[in-house]
Image (cartoon, rainbow over all chains, first blue to last red; front, side):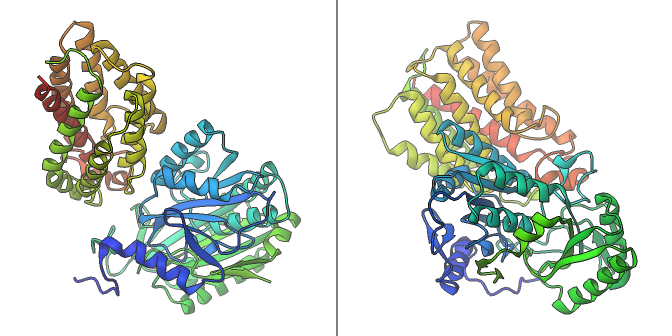
Length: 333
Length: 214
C-alpha cells in the first residue's frame, strides 16, 4: 500500500521537519551548530545544562521539550536512528554554562552506543558531563536486568525534574541524583494496535493482524511476545496497570504521577477513556493520583496504541514537577 | 610491494576499501532487507563518500592524526551502529599507531588489535552473535598470525580477507542477538549478516589497495 504522508523528499525530511519546528516556535527554540535544537534564550551562567539525543520521527519527542526548565539542547538523529557522537559532543559543549552537563539517554542500543562513545570523547577532552539512562519499559527485560529495559515516555518527567533542579542552581551531582531517584521509581508499559511505517522507506515495522494488539511493543513495535486478541479500553488498562503496579511494588497510600501517552494515531478520546479506568483502579486500591497527563509526548508515526507510565513521587519530586517550565510542548506556569 | 605501511600505503588501502564497499553496497542492502531495516548499503555508501572527502583533504599530519580524522568522520555518519562501531575501530587504531609513521607487519597487526579492542569496549557482542564481530575477530587474528609467521603485509592481508569472508559466511547459520535485528531473531537465520559482510569487503579492499602500491 502506498504511504499516505505529506512529505517532500525522504532525503531531506529530517532537515525540513527541524526547520519547520523552530519556525513554528521562534520565541522558544532555534537551530544551532550542526542541526542541534537549542533554547532561543540560553540558560544563565553557573547552571547545569541538560542535553539529550534520539532519533527523529517521534515528534514532539524529544526536541519538543527544549526550553526553560527542561532541556538546553536536543540532538536529533535521522528517522528512528541515533545521532553520531560528534554532534552530541558539540551539544554538550554548547550546554555547558560553567556548571557541567547532565546527558539524558533513553536506553536503546543505538542511542547508548553513541552516548558511550560521546562520554569517552568528552572525558578525553576534559568536559564536565555525567550521563543517566532511562530504562523503564517493563516489557523489554526483567526487573533484575535494567540494562535490557528500554526508555519510553519516562524521559519527559526526567527532563522535567532534572531541568527544574538545574534552574534552581543545584550542582551537577545533585541534578543527577534527583534524575536518578525518579528514574529508579518509574515504569512504563506500551501497547500497539497497529504499527508504524518508516517515513523514508514506507516499510511497515513488525505488522500486526487486523484483530490483534501487542502489549509491550515498545517505541517502534520491536518485540513480539505480548500479542493477543484486541481488547476493550477498560480491560487493556487493567492488564497494563496491574503489571506496572506489581513491578514497581506500589502500596496503598503512595502517590503516583501517571501519564497516558498516545503513539500517533490513537485519539485523545481513547486516551481519556483509558485514563478514566486507570484512575478508578488506583482509587479502588487506595493509591493517590498525585499528578497526571494525557496526550502525545512521544509518538511513532501512525502507530496506534499508547504508553502507560507511572512514577512513585515524593515531596521533592512533586515540587520539581510543579516548578515552572516553558517549552513548545510542555508548559508549567 | 611495500613492506611497511606509511601514510601513502594507508591512503591506498582506504581507496581500495572505498571502491570495494561501493561496488558491494547493493548486496549489503539486500542482506539488510532480510533482517534489518534495509539501509545498511546506503549507510555504507554514505560513509564511503564522507571518507573519500576526508582523504581528499590532504593535510600535513601524522599517520595517527590521519586515522583519527577518519575516525571522527565515521562517528558522524548517522544511521544505526555502523558509523559508531567503525569509528571506534579507527579511533582505537589511531591510538595503537601512536607516534609511529611507518608500520611493519607486527606493528600493523597491533594497530588493528587496538582497533578491535576499542570496538569491543562499545559492544558486548562476541563471535557467534551474528554481528560485524564475527568477521572482525578472525581477520585481526589472521593479521597477527601472519606477522608472527613472518609473512608479507600483502599475504597477511590476504589471509585476513579470507578469514573475514569465512566469518561473514558463518553468520548465515546464526540468529541475531544484538542490534535491531535481534527483534527479528529467528527470521535472520539463513541470512548472512550485513555488518560482517561489510567488514569482509573492507579487508578485501585493503588487500587490493596494498597490492596496487607494488
